[in-house]
Image (cartoon, rainbow over all chains, first blue to last red):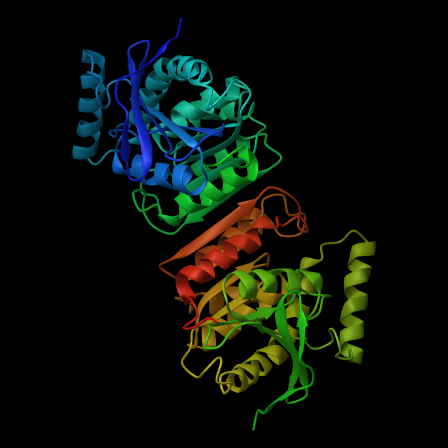
Length: 253
Length: 253
């Protein structure tokens, strides 16, 4: 039984914020403060080293909740946020820092470690979605979208490839490698962000992953700037992408 | 003297539509019906085979005028719309149709012919901008943007490279060739659209032109689909791009 337990209920940035756990995994659900009916749900996975309530998450949530009227759920990924790292996590983080210190490419470590975290996180997301869909304000057959950059893409691509409940997804900024195979099984509309001057991921690597998606509708957004310089207007673009594909809430107060 | 002569004044699609000529070149100026103050101006060049009032122009103009509150001006390119083709135009069109009928690439003919048309059109656009800036509702120092796909990009890239009055531009769907050199002189914010499955322009050709822009802020939007399948939501993206860079009108009624 994947029961969802709410542990808090407050008003933050104009949104109703409820923290919860599912099978012990901590998450947060942001909802329109004035909602009376059902609304689409966006699952949002955070980036590596971040957590469920990082400003990059709350900032996007405000657009999706306050502007679109959606629910947004974020889980802490294993070893992130309120979740303790294992010895394996510590070793992988040390390997990443060692590669950085030596001026070696981060990609091989990040790809390997993100694949490990995704194996753990994907079943957690499925269980969380099962539980969230039992809430009357979301419902079992309501529209569901996915948003995740960086590590969020490493989790999201296998999640979306295996879960037909998710019907639109925004990804970005990851190496192809292990993601090409699940990407080839994805046919829903996709928006994919890359940085044109990314110092970690080559243009060809971004093109390879984008090309792999089997979606008939997919858009690649390549912006000038380095890996961490993703422009803020991409969050607004994601909100409009979801508005096109998830529709609008059934009822607003 | 590049005087602007208005030849009509009507209300179309909720916009004030004024046809005009500058040095005999026919154009149209769409403006907010309820405007009382000054507003930014978007110069919009049409695609090959189209004309100033083609639905692709009026549809985008409605977004820029009715949603953003801007003025939009379009000129008929030589040999298009109300302008008679010369013997040279007829010969180039015949060469294009012959290439199509033979299943040969269109690129070499289109690149050559568009470069010829751009040489004629760029001075016409400069003269039109001179004249439009004398209108009190536009003004000599107001923000000016440029929008043009296909042939509109062939005209717009050399126009924008040589005219510092234009401070934001949306381009797309053209071969690099003669445009790389002027693109290297462009430093203003750029949004560039390409089709991921374009049957005429290769991905590498699109990347080469996008890469050439010297702009610190530039965005490439690659959408799935063939050459003529540019999604409509790119027009909305262009409207938001202009809103970020040209600002909002000084006064609205």
